[in-house]
Image (cartoon, rainbow over all chains, first blue to last red; front, side):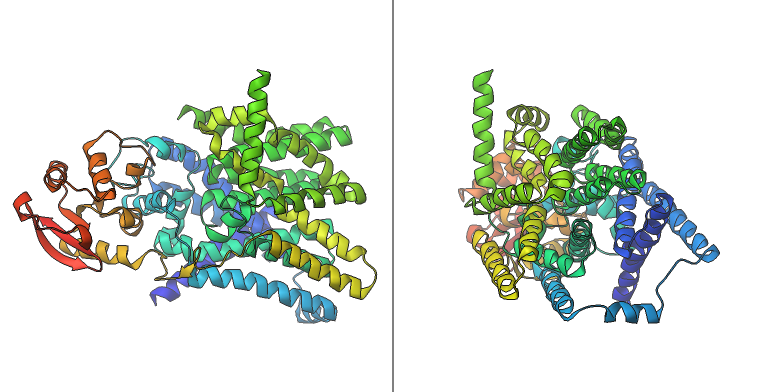
Length: 353
Length: 256
């Protein structure tokens, strides 16, 4: 029963709610989105809302319960808006016949490539599910989450000793602007799971799927929705990552061994996500809405790690600067700068801590 | 000034060398980028030129200095190379090349060569050194969990001194256990170098334990339990700690 409840809660908080709120965000941004883009939007939206509220709550020494209530309320309001809109105006949800037609449109080679792709991604999910890689950086991250979950105080317990603190100290102070461990604590409360189980098993598997969803969307954008090319691209990425242990520093190594940590999420999910959104912006379709996605990606990067604050700003800055020069448009550059405002605020706060 | 820029450029190069191990993947990456930039107009417009701007920022000694000042440690700069988007560029180039080949046998050969290149240039991640079968869903060493459970059985909020091999996991498991020191003895979170607790950690690490000093520090800090590797186990009753039990390869002592 306990496992069943946990599974339901994972479904609700990590799958259904992000999907519904993502649909809402895509609707507001007027973006024709696929199911996976809606899910990505919901995940990024959730991370953004958390980051925008949690940092100030931590600085004001508020409780995790308050952050959890505010976050849940925001996500539920977005999901409710989506449900209401769905009831008012039914979207084009494919019926059985359309599904059948879509599946029949797959050629043999497409089936083969998709099957190989599923095997490769499934293999990585299985490895994260059944095997373990122990990384001692978790001694801080997971211990922070465990302490926040148990004490309701955020970043006010020494992760190494358990001593109660009056304010975050040392490296802990840097986590005030990048409180990913507190997000894990919140999720572990909502799903009734231990933060270590949530991170090392559930998030590891879910985030692996998300990585390849993003790569599929990048490929869709590059190869204009050619299914065979998309599947081949994901297969190449899968092989690249499985044989990606070229050194202990590479982005593949971080993705394959400790994807649950904030810095790895920057490397494996948020940097590719920014590439994806920039590719969409370069297509010059529904451009305004995509900047909202870029904003969510930069905010999410700030949530993950101190380096994430810098990386997302550099990436967005480089791309929008190049696009602005190429398109001779100041507006592109201004939008880019606007997307990096959170980075500027958090860099200022980070430097001051 | 010029010398500093030169030195920082060399440092970036060293970090880049470290970043990709043998460097084969990096060569592959830049070859793929060059191919796409020359042969694919769409790539040039959408990704190529923005990425040249990105290269100018990443491989820049001035950026290196700024990041160094900001993070307080130059070593972290290798993480900047995550922004190169290797998997995207290499994937793009390989699919592009395969799709340009018109003959089926040529396509198959290109797939095999590409797969071979990726495998040869990297290293398999799922080896025994990196991954092991999970002990539990928490993916924490069973040893550490059993010791934590033993401590919690004896006290609701125990404070303990535990060996280096397990101190990183105890507090991942339970917030109810306090430790004399953890990874802060290795300089993480906030270094405790210069304190008595640090001296104890060094003694235990170097297997050169002054039991009188260790127990004295523990008593002063309210440490109720001492966990030692069986190899270091000793009768501590004369120092005010009594043997309680063994858990796997460790012995647990409790303050009298």
